[in-house]
Each structure stands twice: as structure tokens, then as C-alpha cells.
Image (cartoon, rainbow, N blue to C red):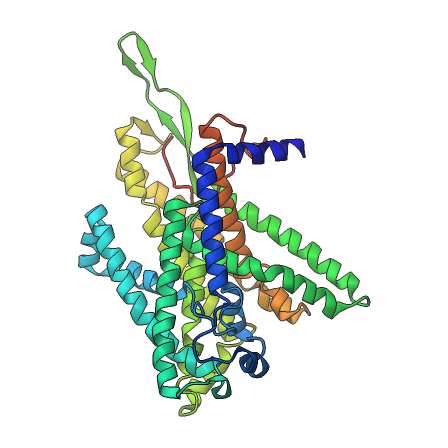
Length: 441
């Protein structure tokens, strides 16, 4: 305990780190306050009485947004439209030469891509806001003219989403951790204490043993997720000896740490953001089409096999896709050749690149399958008797996001401590967050 308090003291001793932590906390407070501001023209009392708690896929979205979705908040759509836009842009970067060219233009290309992503975010928010207003806000709770309410709400929802994007960018730039992921995580964590209390109350004294078993099962799932997040496949690298003057350099053996989950939590976020679209779009035409009504009902139920099968396939696809764009075997091979390194038994150049690509594919497949299994765990937990709200934390997207973001944040904090020659957070070694890039030591 004494070491813990000393570590906290060291953290706030470093001025830059202290300022970044305070900036992050301040921005998160602003984000949480905004989630309680209701859209103009909505009676929150009537809304709560008529709408109740969001269920199914809407309940999952409400978990990510910390209750902003069910409260008809100005942040009701949160950061999800921006994530959807990012998915589209990254897909275009693979297939469209113009976007491939922008990626190679460095900082100027990155700025153009960010501008295009923001414009696309506005378009996606516009479409999602129409579905949100039509599907989730009862007419009895609207105190304005319906047409004027729809126009003003669309404008406010677009502004709210763009403001959350700006807040996320400020966290990344001025704070600690990845801002976009941090906003999602804080929305999830804000609901956790209430869901634990609600689960305890629902089980009562007669179900106390079952509740204890739920907590124990969750503990082992958390341990498995942490182990999976930090798991690596180390490829040995030998560096040739070089004589410079009277000294000999190189000759040592090091490793390329290829992560089993190189894509981190992004495949889950990408897949989840796409899973929100079918029920939102289907609810617009649910009254005019039986197919739309079926799609809306099926994909609003996160326990349905259609939802989980689609969700799992999307995670598999996005895991391979995101790994392919974040880990470049050709670049790793070139860096090895330039630094005089080679993999024992493997020829330098193209053969090394193919070997790294093969290893990466072999570890990504089981990693993506494990990621998909953990992501659909809430459905099995719910069917086993766990409350719907609490089951969202029983593995699944919520847990993966929390573990990944917390590891990333702790990794950044430890980097500051070690850079200032303080003792790290862990005696057993450095924390390996999911955002570490594959590097040649």
C-alpha cells in the first residue's frame, strides 16, 4: 500500500503528466454533464415514463453512451457516427487510389482525410438522427411542433456528435490515452456501479450464491481478456556484428513482438457501430414493410442468433482488415535489412516479409475467433439468467473496451514515470498496452 501511494505521488510530481491527467478528467466531466442535457422540446419526465429503459441493441448502445441514448440527450448518438465514418474511410483507403495517395502524403494527407471523415460523420449523424428521433422518442414527450422538433433535434444531434469528436481529439492531444476510446469507456464505466446494485437487488438473498458465481465467472473472464490482450508471438532477430573503429557493435539477439491481437479493440468498435445501423434504419420503414419490421426486431435483440452470427463475422473480418493496415510485414522486413538484422534460417528481403506475414496470419486467426467469442458472451450470460444490463459487462464489447483502454492509459503513465527515472507501476515488468506498435528494437 505504501508503494501504491508513493506511485500516485510520483505521478502528480511530474508536471506534464499531472496537467494531462487533469485535462483528461476535466474533459470527461464535460462529456458526462452533456449526456444529461435533454434535447430542446422533450419533456424528460414523460419520456422516462413512456420510454423506460432501452432494451436489446438500443440498450447496448445506451450502455456505451452512459445513458445518453435513453435520456434523449444532446449527446444521444455520441461518438458512434464518427467511428462509422472512420470505417468507411479506411475501407476506401484500401480500394480507392485517391485515398491511398492521401495516406502517403504524410501530415497534409492526414489532414485531408480527417476533413473528409468529419464531413462524412455529419452525413451519417444526419441519417442516424432521423431514425433515432422516429424510433425512440414518443410523440407524447414532444412539446414542440413535430416538424420543428425534428429539424432542431437533427441540428442539435449533429452538433453534439461533432462536439464529442472534438472532445476526443483534445484528450488525445492534451490528455492521457486515446480520446475516442476514452469517451466510450467512461460511458460504459458510468453504468457499471448501478448495474451491479440492480443485479444484487434482483437476485435478493435467495440468489446471493448465483450472484457470487457471476462475479467469480466475470473475474476469470477479465483475467482471460487481459492475458489475451497482452499475448505476443516473439520472432527472434539476429543482428550482424559491425566493427567501427576499435569497437564492435551488434551481434545480439532481439525479438519482434507480434501481438495475437494486433488490432486491439478497434474491430469490436467497428463491428458494433455497424450493428447499430440495421435497427435504426429499419425502424424508419417498419410500418410500411414486413421485411423492415423483421430486420428491426431481429437486430434489436442482441441474443438472437442472426445478430450474434453477423456480429461475429464482422469481428473476424475487421480483425484481419485492421491488422493488415496497422502491421506491414514489408516495412518490418525493410527495417531489419537496413539495420543489419535477419531472422535465423530465413533469407532477407521478400522471404522475410512472407515469413512474418505467415506468422501474423496464423496468430490472427485464433485471436479473431477468441475476440468474437468474448464479444458475444453477453448473449450467453443473459440466456443463463444474468440481468440484461449487467450481462453487457459480462465479457463482450464493454469489457474488451475497458481492459484495452485501461491498459493503454496505464502504459502511457508508466512511460512518463520511467522517462523521469521513477519506479514503474509494476515490479514484474512494463505494462504492455494494446496500442504498442510492432517495432524493431
